[in-house]
Image 1 (cartoon, helix red, strand yellow):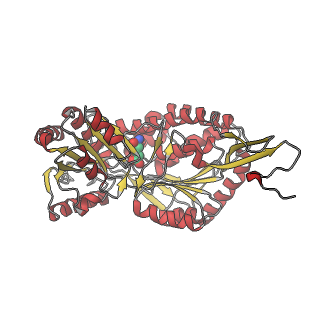
Image 2: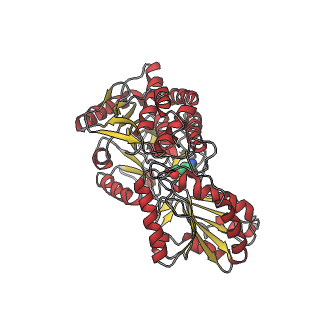
Image 3: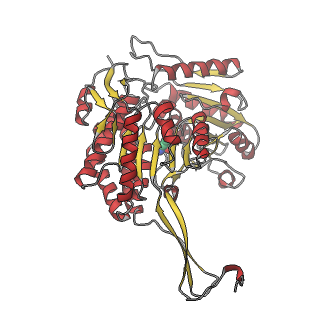
Amino acid sequence: MLNQYNYNEVLQQLGLENINLGASDGQQWLGHGKTVDVLTPIDGSRLASVKQANADDYEQIIAKAAAAFNTWRMVPAPQRGEIVRQLGEELRKNKEALGKLVTIEMGKSIQEGLGEVQEMIDICDYACGQSRMLYGVQTHSERARHRMFEQWHPLGIVGIISAFNFPVAVWSWNLCIALICGDVCVWKPASATPLTAIACQKIIEKVLKANGLPAGIACLITGKGSEIGERLNLDRRIPLISYTGSTKSGIHISKVVAERLGKTILELGGNNAIIVTKNADVTLAAKNILFGAVGTSGQRCTSTRRVIIAESVYAQFTELLLSYYKKITIGNPLSEGSLMGPLVDTQAVDTMMKALDAIRSQGGKIIYGGERLPEDKYPGGCYVIPAIAEVTNNLAIVQEETFAPILYLVKYKGDVESAIKIQNDVPQGLSSAIFTNNLIESEQFLSHAGSDCGIANVNAGTSGAEIGLAFGGEKETGGGRESGSDAWKVYMRRQTNTLNWSETTALAQGIKFD
Ligand code: UN1
């Protein structure tokens, strides 16, 4: 019943076959590892198979990447930007098919699948412009006839390990910025989403080939995190690993990469809250919270997980939110009529069910949803009704990130400071928001003593960030920043230069050494 679309048509449009090689150096496709089936969470059916990379494939590809870096770093940055601009053009042409494939492979609604591809296009445009703005500072030397400045040089191979929930956008944020910085990239996508990765790899290969560029600039290696991911983490030829995923894996990766003094960008778990004060436009808040909690079936790292509501508006807000939840349409995410699709797999549904049990046993109260939808009407077993629970913030389960559509309601008494205290009282620090029309409350939230998150919004939700500024979070979220603003600097090597044109020796700090 749900399968009203022809998945094969979308796969074919993007050059995917029944069995696909899962690794590429940008010109040659390889895959001598295990063959795995890829299933769609829409109805549990098999989409295609992928032959993963083995250790030899890995070695071959990293050797190509290392060689390509020597060429690519010498291409002028604005010319590198031009390649990224062309990638944006190709993505525009493939937006519909790729958006559909994202939806088919991991289950987010088609609106959000298309939105994800739009984020890729946006970062291409952004990175192209940034390629002419890799600015280094200069300052005045304390010594006569000396010049001091900083330069930003390409870093090397960047390993990108991405998650299933943004199977293609996370790659593009890293890839586009890394490419204009003169780096080459090796991508290990999430095990659940190799097909979107293969499709993207084919798109970028077309651009690289059309420009006569060598193999190794943009590479793909599919495989298990514990095998291929771990090889990347350990590999001294790779100066930077950008990882998006769980805090648990992030801590492991951070230790392994630090052991060889490599750099990491970590985008880990969030536990994002929205404060609704007595001065909030309650309707605006409820609408934003609906998207934040239910969008991508609650599987964004920016998903709204907690709402901290002033006692005086609690009843009014809750009633309104419940009325919205009752109208949520759940079903095939390819259908424009569905607001919410399936979770990524049945394991994710089990995790949600366990979290709901934990809420009950820890003293929370589920006031809406949480049911698994029946397989006869919703084949595949991945559909649920999103849940709302009344809790206190200190419950162990509330302190964790459960990657599912469970929204916690926490009542607060007193002023906005008490709400901010609750909002900050979790180990994670990615995204946060306040809904208020009161200037003082808003400024308090944004102040040094306000939200401790990497993202803090006023009258806008926790998810759906634009690409123009830096994206990432503090505390257990890992501290990494990607995308816009000066996030590009992590992808480069900084060099401080002093140039003496005095024709004499002059030591800094006034030291005489004659
Ligand atoms: C993620 O969930 O890993 O802000 C990234 C957002 C998106 C990115 C989410 N632009 O929700």
